[in-house]
Image 1 (cartoon, rainbow, N blue to C red):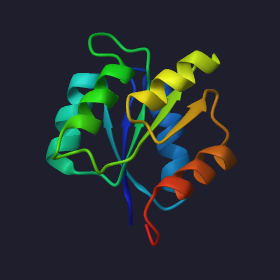
Image 2: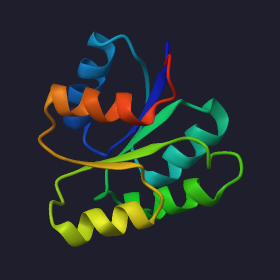
Image 3: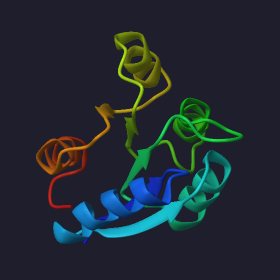
Image 4: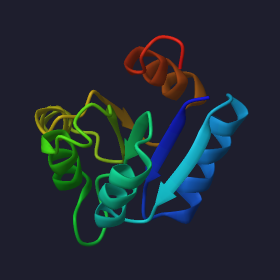
Length: 123
């Protein structure tokens, strides 16, 4: 079973994502901000990270950049999941190392489709 780390400062959004993932057979971990997200990723080595952008302290773009440049976490795909829906936001997120970009509110179909596209086969 693949493990997915949800990094989001909103308990409501975390709950929604967690519910979708668990209903589809994924194990979930969560972190309330970018700093804790990086630390959890380094310790737990999840198969995938869902990263919010707008968070206090280290934002999702900064956290994604650090994760993608860290040899310990660089192989973990990051999908940005955010309310920021401008094309420039998406381009910037992908430049930081994200493998995909999803705009909230998230549809279960779109989320599962993006996850299956970035996870290694069989996860």
